[in-house]
Each structure stands twice: as C-alpha cells, then as structure tokens.
Length: 325
Image (cartoon, rainbow, N blue to C red):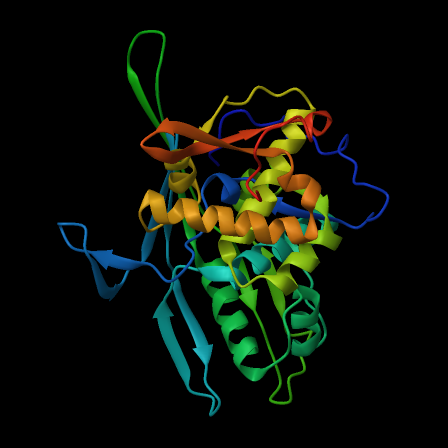
C-alpha cells in the first residue's frame, strides 16, 4: 500500500511506551496518510455542489500518492431476521475505533485471523463504546462496511529515463467474515470468524502499524464525538515520534495539505477551525502532545493561520504559540 513521505522503517520493535501504560495498540499508517471520511460521503454536481445521493467511493491525496476507497456490498439483518443490503463507505468515529481494534488484534495475533469477544456487549466494551441496541447495530454496520471496503493505492513518479510511471495496488480489507449474534446479544464464537485479506494484512497492517499506548486513546474515545480528533491524535503520536528520532519533516505543514490528508469535505478555513478545536480536546488528555505543535501565523491583514510546525520534547516552552493557546 501507499506510504507517505518522511515515514519510519516500519520496525516498531525499538518503539517504547512510557511506563504509565504498557498496553500497546496499533493503527495502520495508511489511514493516517489517507483518512476515512468523517461523515457518509455524498455525490457532487459538476459544479462541486453536494447532493443527497450517497457516494460509494472516497479518494484522498498525499503528495504523489492517492488512495481510493470503494464500498462493497454489505448485508445486515433487521430485528425480524430480514436481510438488508447496501453499499457503504465506512465513516465517522466508529469506523476508526473498529480499524484500531482490527489492527491491534491482528498485530497481537501475528496473522490475519481475529478473535471476537464472546458477547456483543463484550465486543462493544472492548471497543470502548457504551452498550445500546442502537450502538450495536451501527457498530456492526460499520464493521461490515470496513471489511467489505476495497482499496486502490496509486503512486505516480518519473524514472531516470523521464518516463511517467503509475503504480497501482488493489486489495479488499476482509477476506472472510461470519458474525453470529444470538437474539439476546451473545456472540457465538464457534460460528463467528473474521479474517483480513492476506494482502491487506501484509501491505497495511504488518508493514506500517503505528504503535501507541492505549490509556490516552481510551480516554479520548470516551471524551470526543469527533472522528477528526481521533485521526489527529494518532497522526501526532506518529509524527512527533519521528521528530524525536530525527526524521526530517517540513518546516511548516500547511492547512491545505492537512485538509487533503485528513479527508475534510469542507473549506480550508472551516477545516482549520475544526483542527484547532480537535487539538484542544486532545490537550485535555495529553497536554504535552499539543505543547509540541506550533501554530504558525502569517502577518498581514489580520492574522491568517498558515499551518503548523512540529517540535521535539526538549523544545516545549521555548516561546512559540501552540494550537491550544
């Protein structure tokens, strides 16, 4: 799968979490460089106006890389046992929590086969989602949508001869999915199985898993309703770790670049406000993380925010303005 620029080698063995939380979780780097949609995507007119027609694809760009996500057909069963089918691009907070769970469990298992909790309530508890029948139905819907998703990763480059190269990799997330829940909410573990596709496991999960401690992640999941907040938290954990390791990074990361990466289906100005609001939420559970993110202002008519700059831990408190200020 596509890997963004300025990334580490993928060897997570040298990464260590602070002593306050030895439980390590993982999230696929691919979905930090190319975020899932925040809400259900819709079609647009030729003039760029939104419609009410659901879109079955979602495309994000990062430098010379792009990732296209195409919805598969999913089947859910309503309360009277009637099957319902739809095509859905996974979106929102639950899709990220599920992706976090799948990646963590696959890394822990050392393979694409994932075991589920023995009850629906236990499964939601593992995810950090409060139990309700409504939550349970939406979690199952997003889980099935995520596993049915097809990814197309494209890289455009120029070789030494001046020829333009377009390299594409395709994969589906889930290879085999059987989820059996009884009417009383118990999950039949013997009948249920969840298997990621080998290509997704090899190219996305195993190749670039981003490690982090679970404690603050769980705090943030319970605090925020915003999928963007979860994306930014994981991305900053990853990028600021790179800064500590001496990996080169851009002097200023523009709002335009961040909006393209994080899947904002809105104006850059509106995205900037949402990003800053998300950073303030993150600061409630991990203030030192946001203390390392400088807010860059451009002087002119008023004060126009241009982007952010990342700092090492030793630079905290050296006089720059942070996103939480």
